Length: 427
Image 1: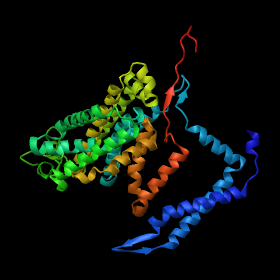
Image 2 (image 1 turned 120 degrees about the vertical axis):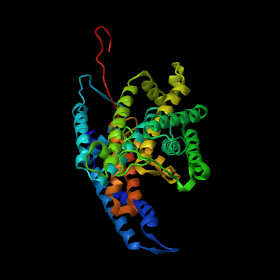
Image 3 (image 1 turned 45 degrees about the vertical axis):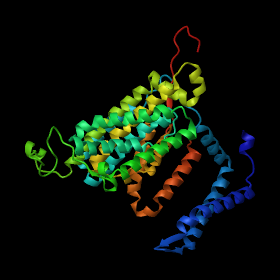
Image 4 (image 1 turned 60 degrees about the vertical axis):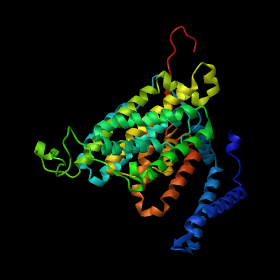
């Protein structure tokens, strides 16, 4: 090991790495940054491409030199070994989450008092994607099922509220459980015939299901409104409305309780209910992962043949993960529809499924805390990078590539607390 760390620095190797990085940067940045569309024509911007390629080449040269030093090799070795396997903690380990979670709950309670409408809506969107990430984390992270059409269940929840109000007169509170049940049934109906498939085949089928749902919502104009979409009613609190003036002879909440009208009250209410739902889903997921069904999901993900040989019904285990993940997406769809006040098919494209999958991969497959952090990173960061709107997707792609290289298990690996063996039992 010490001999490997004391090898001389090879300038030739660094130069080769620099040239290869420059060629890759030219291929990536050339069409994206060097060609600017102008109506039906285009303008070339070679100067910007040259600067970007130079920055990449110089950076790669310096990194290559550093990685050949003893300290750089030590850092490289630490990264290579850091992401492998499940991290097993000692039985006496006490998680810092027992202090962090109460602090976060206190911050969440006082947050609406100091937040303006813009910050509040961004946090609501972040919490919606936390719900979506937690649901897909059950399907992909725990059960190992690559679902590329997860946005379909999200759309079923959102349209469940909109169409339920339009045709059945259902409100927010009645649509919340019914949409979750409808999405779970859709997941069950889709899952039962296709979950015997594996890997790429399953991904293609779920991708097709997501596109079918989007096309049905777009083309069934008489029922769903088609591209024009459907308006969604505002939520109510025991029949009290949050608008300045109530509709259909109702009573506004500010008049009923005798306080001044606040236009942000609707978003504060959605935030409060959404936060409680997210906490409930986090608790349920935490408990499920420690129950036999959660262990079955993880075991099936690691080695399906071995689990089937132990007597597990692989179809039912996968179906349970698919159904629970779909119901969580249905809940998120109801909150999204209430938050928007309007739904149309353009909100449920394949890009949304890819974004939710990126949240799961970035946070860590099976990691609850990692998914929560990644959901806020990938929803709040685009708002902070609005001045770089042209390059947001490019920066997003670079971030994912770096994550796959340096942290293949995600931001936070799955950890398991060890068990102290009982007396008289061999370790």
